[in-house]
Image (cartoon, rainbow, N blue to C red; front, side, top):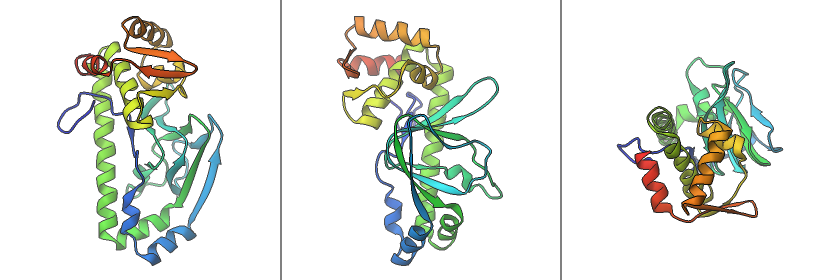
Length: 233
């Protein structure tokens, strides 16, 4: 997987723990954000925000699973998968920016907190520790996206799929057995491959005893070999 100083894996997700930078806020700052925060629920497949629409809020994923992606006439490019605890939409903090840089859509029924972006920016101006933590998170997101682009351009198809499976296991579900919330089309989109290629490689992984599928669950049987494929794929 992706590690410090190396672009060896896709690291498709970020924010797999609660954003601790909110602990850096004073009681008054927390109250201010609470006054400018609403909670919204979204159905499976629903758009949370649309690329190039007005950026009115920063999002915290409370429950569920979502993806961010760039839309274009030639197709969509997935940037990241976000697990509960993730902070989404920080790219909208660019000075002078007024719109979302990418779209966000749910994979499953999800719940998000929407924080008014003006209130968020005001606290950034007055709380340097909070601002530093947000900058750190932005940098981490940049590193993860760089790792994914390395994967797309330098790895073969087997390595790309191994990356995705390990990412889902280690960063999203934190288990060697996890539900298949993503269908073949979702996985193909995430790894920049065709659905046919995904089906062929999954069959090969099963034949080699790397993974199994039972009752809508994917089970990793040989994580070390998968990791080797990811690193050398």
